[in-house]
Image (cartoon, rainbow, N blue to C red):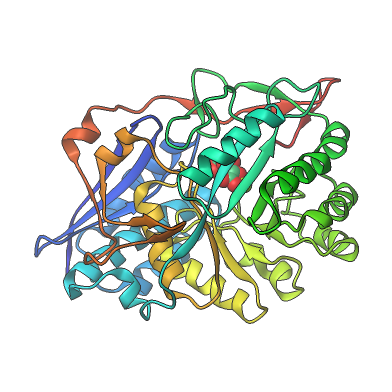
Length: 410
Ligand code: CS2
Ligand code: MG
């Protein structure tokens, strides 16, 4: 199965996506997601300038060997750009292997461990009324688990909060994608105001929607360890499924302090790239869910290793699935999630209709659960004509400042 062609396709149906397409001499093709939100072209160059020239002519059936060749061979290991590029190659090779075998990728990974994948969506609102409307809209769309993000009195713009009331699934692209434009948008932040406001919001949500609905929250790296501990304690009565990214977790030790004070489940890792980023927090059981995306963690081959390591400590998966993970990356997550034993939950934010036209997919979404489908490979095809209608557009994630002008984690 010699790789004959490797192409990098950039398309922007409502947001930018970077896709690697590998084709073998036999004419089998595979797709891999290499999208790095707001820094897309860096991965394009890494692939086009450094990876494509050494892929062509290799035996595409050797997935692990190709992974090691790209990881060890580069000498410069880890990091989001390298690992997104390797992930794209890895996904594309699993896709090809599945097509060659006539099996969906989850079968090659050991077969299904469950009927489907519980998925959560993103509800948000500036006010309680908008938030409740958004939660109701998600319930109507079939979600059985919901992430709750809220505006904070006194703050104008917060990442993850839709800026208008039409926060209906599939219709709102005004939050979370990197914003198109020449310069990143500035938002504002005040941690004390947030800590005062959030517990009351969860109390109101529980009173309105009852005790059973799994609720999640993303702290987006904004708290110090002691602030995170305080928030975890304050949220305990509302029985959250998880509190995500409570601190900037590249300081893995910070989580020890959080753990000493609260039993709230912790989820971390959407900005991690390798098992090495998880070494301490998994071994010391400082988290409950691994948030990595297949796209940003070296592909199916590497994330599977991270999740198997996590399984030894009863830590589960909670794979990243906002709209900056392309339909190809989402498909890879679904195949992996279906096969592993320690699946927890899958984030599923839903792509726009234009994105669905570019990427033809075979997954199903029923009763709050995802399933990757049974087409051979990953089950996604890319329509080149549709992709060509949407050229790349410069886009940046926002940043934020405190009232005195200090830049803060967003
Ligand atoms: C968020 C993401 O989905 C999440 O949990 O944290 O929206 C994240 O900020 C973006 O993927 C960044 O690209
Ligand atoms: Mg997050």
